Image 1: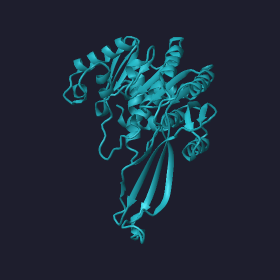
Image 2 (image 1 turned 135 degrees about the vertical axis):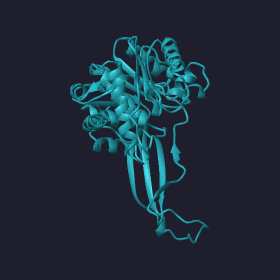
Image 3 (image 1 turned 180 degrees about the vertical axis):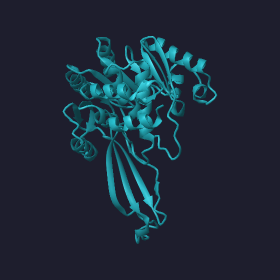
Image 4 (image 1 turned 90 degrees about the vertical axis):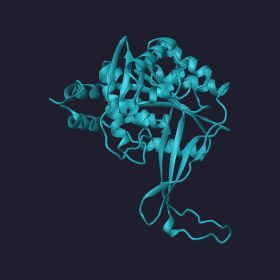
Length: 346
């Protein structure tokens, strides 16, 4: 029987079956990723302007930010309920349409007038070499946090979605996203009442109480007042990493899983500290979406009964699968997790 850092294929298979049956709520900043592929060999100088236009031959759309977490969760779990806010615009319609094609419900997503649906639009140029090169992104991003009536509508949707849920995941990515102070207070309240709650937040991770926090090393350092580079260097010793994770745990009264890129992760959960090494990978890799993939697999594993180390290993395997999917925010299926464990296991 193969095992990877102590996790056997039999145990992983058992957890995957339990994960599939969970009911999970994803509260997050919904975004649509749009790729426009331009064949520059077809471009001709414009007669009106001194520019070569981008002749778009096809486009691809996929949910991004919190929407990508919902997709990653849906690959491993049959009952995923995204909760968030979109605008009454073409990007919002595209997002709900893509969710529908993926059999992800939009019942708990609030549509708001006069609000922008977050979008990352990525023009991709291809010339005679056949290699896609990405131009600077065109971003649509809300310029203020939700408040008042919109807050109340979102909180009502969140409470409804969580009524019989097994786990709540929060993807708090944008500066002016859907997780306002009032919404965050509701998340902490729900977590305090016993619903297993996981949080990924770029700049507000230490403000969540009673949750399981998933910062990367830079986010953890900032949350506890350390210099950005103090934990991100390959030379950062284990004592410093452990000190930082314990400091954040104490500050937020929360369990913490700190991801460390190609150095793996460290988990402090229920008083148990676990250190997991990364899967060794060769180039090329694409780290876009790796954190979303990690928190999806990690949170479902813990909710399914995994211990801290097992959950960390499953999250690590998932992110290793994700980063090998180039030019896309990839996900990791149960079959892929098992296959990677078998190939890497002893």
